[in-house]
Length: 336
Image 1: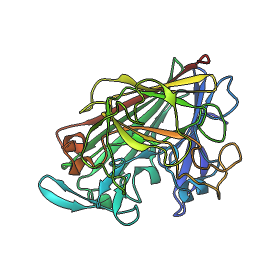
Image 2: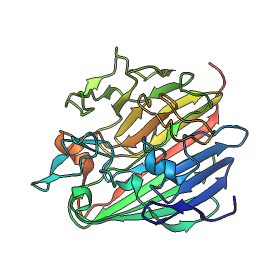
Image 3: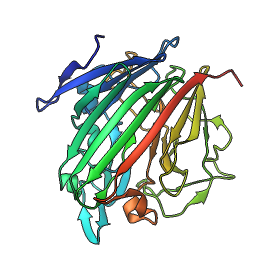
């Protein structure tokens, strides 16, 4: 693919979409201006893609799953599509079964065209502005996201945002990883540096309990095999009570590869894709993706933050500045 942004099609309403390829340090990443999507990620010497993705824009617009997108303005779910902000009740777009707001609503950051601000062989900066009142959220939100390839090899993502009125902000990358190229993640193991997790109700909303993982099926403090059968995992693991310094929080292994995730974020949503079905849209390898085809590791605020005791994680005031950094490091992993 030639250097620089290349046309990738146009959205249903005619907005042009660009694909930019980054290549350095043994990694190649293809990134779309639509949704700031990480469309493809390749490691030298590995034949298959490391993430799930689609070869066409139409598939991204039509298929479920938010594959590779940066989701927000507040990632994950808001119960009832309602929350208080600055002492006032606000109602948001309820885009999940008409009862919850998921990933910022139907026109959240993962489904919008971003602007390309700068690019080089190893880095790309995208920008997006959400208007005051967009999807029901107060405050104009100006967002910048930079993907970069570094020694390691590693893929880093830096997201910054600012607002002109108190609002909610918590963005997250939503890539699905598959390190061995098989049809599901049955051969993967995962370690998470989390002592607790959040139980959820039937609508996948946290109950308010912060439950220790010890003695449960959610104890990944020591690496263990991932479940590749229903019900799977779609839960938040509590890494910290607030955003902090960059540190390693999880390691995924399969097929002789290891990926270590470092992040500044307080939570890690783990989704083993039990409900994923792209049967109408073949993926990068030519076959559709089914349940458990990949695992989404989403560093973010804890879910339903504005309605829970951890509300401060998602608040953003005009005087503050939102900064999120996540790094995905790759290495060879000898068999256990």
